[in-house]
Image (cartoon, rainbow, N blue to C red; front, top):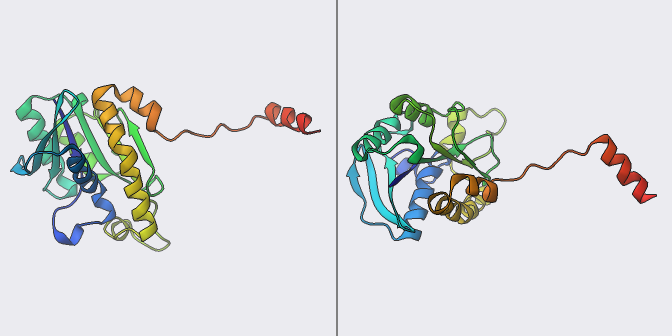
Length: 205
């Protein structure tokens, strides 16, 4: 059994804001998987689904972002699930809007929801699924940025990212996180060395 937790803030005023891409992804995944009825449990909203032969629990903490661990930790403890079987989906300002990145473990990177989860479960050894929301505009505060809604262009980029991220999460469950990272993480462009640049120049002569 796995838990897939998407982070966000409850309430109408926060719907479709950048900080809620975790909620948005979980809703898209639940629809794709034809998940069961949402129930109020563990300080959150919980639904069950199947990915391949594996039962998964979809969790949206209703604690507000900064206390996300108060929902994730009780769910892990109740089902006796190890951090390694936890997948957390959250927004990331260091990635352009719509870019995704999967990591096996990592620090909070300044994200208060992740910081809360690490503190409550006493581990960072869970799978981080990051969805880019881009950097704040000039003179914008971080809170203004994460609590604002996406532009139409960025909204389209995020929705397109979900189309990639759903099979990526399915790959994590049915195959392995390493396979998912190799297949779905963006690839870095290799920097040209001086030797390669000279070789290319000679070929062009």
